[in-house]
Image (cartoon, rainbow, N blue to C red; front, side, top):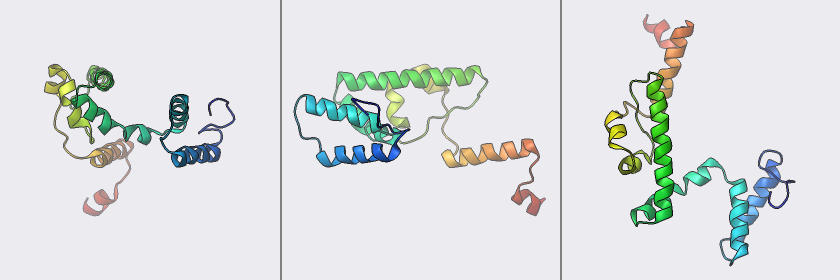
Length: 150
């Protein structure tokens, strides 16, 4: 953990959790370098869900015209465009955006991409189950419902 390397989320998770708790207890009060230091420490211990929790605020600020928020969302939209392009190049025929932020990205995506997306036919769990069933069929595994119903 900054400024050294003795504490890290991977090597010393208990110490990283303690450092994170210390940051939470200290709160956001401070000025100048103190705030910058806390931000750097937070970034070192933040998990994906911590960053995801900031997304609604970024979209809110983008809606108010904040240039940096708009840049962040534009970069994310470009990543989505690149991922979808690659999936299409690999032969994927149906692509849906899912999750709480999917609709919020709509105005930031190209017309071409928006027109190629399809509405989800279920949620993420139903998609995972569909993939698992397909893999079980491919491997010849007899699923319980097939054993019962023939």
